[in-house]
Amino acid sequence: MATAFVTGGSGFVGANLVRALVGRGWTVRALVRGAAENLDGLPVERVHGDLFSPELPERLRDCDALFHVAAFYSLRRRDAAEVMRANVGGTQAILAAALAAHVPRVVYTSSVAAIGVRADGRPADETYQSPPAALVGVYKQSKFAAEEAARAAARAGLDVVIVNPSTPIGPWDRKPTPTGEIIVRFATGRMPGYVETGLNVVDVADVVAGHLLAYEHGETGERYILGGENIDLLALLNRLAPLVGRPAPRLRIPYPVALAYATVAESLAMLRGVQPDVEVEAVRMSRQRMFYDIAKARETLGYTPGPIAPALEAAVAWFREHGMLTSP
Image 1 (tube, rainbow, N blue to C red):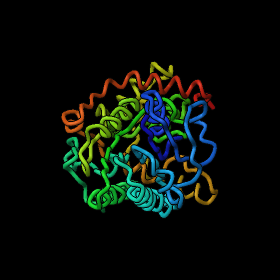
Image 2 (image 1 turned 180 degrees about the horizontal axis):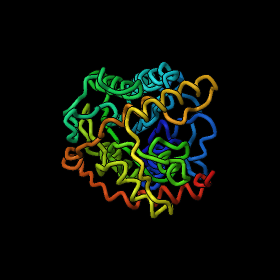
Image 3 (image 1 turned 45 degrees about the horizontal axis):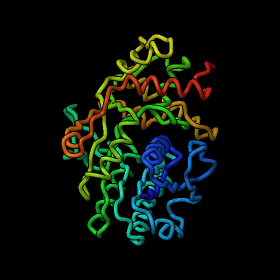
């Protein structure tokens, strides 16, 4: 029976990946911090610690695979140093531990954030790369730097494959993620307007399937976009509307207005020590249409994502079941 070590196993993608691995008969060892409620009831060995824990090479020694899913997502300017430490330093540390432990294969979960977007609005593929300085916000820059660390580890002899999920949706989004937050805000009447932007949306189950395909068929040092459907935000809200019983907003918020609001909101939140309603970096990102081309993963991995409608239904049902769609 094969053994997988999963970092970030109690997060959104990680929790879905752990369930898929268990369902396939893998023995799973998950690195966790805190209560890790997303893993409750699963036959998973929990390893308490972080990516810098000195005992990780020993805990990885008998593993057949490492799935490095953990990442720190924040767009707040005050979190910039910790984002870089966790996403870049943490990736370097866990890959060094895997190399020392002679782990046969590693799948590193990057993000399309590391790739950036094309200036002409066309979907980007794995061959495209925005200049690092053009990546909006420290999170995107940290994922680019972490990919560079993964490629360096591959050159040093570690068999590591890189996957770049786009914008997954589905169950077990406990935090929730920024996309999950869009669903929750809209469903609870906290989205009076929308900004004109676009996303590549994908079922988290397809992202998990892509991880397993990358483990089985991916080429060392290569990146594979795990995306789904390119869709404008308003079109996405129109698809959500019948699921939550609420019409999509009609008010389009101009970019300068959204940016001014976010600047004030984030400044006040920093003074009060609370989470801002909207981050400046999120508004800056919204100016770009984040569309992606999945042809490489489809052709070389056999990656075949399905429609996003079932994922939207599953996400809404999970949020409702866990009391997150109660209107204020």
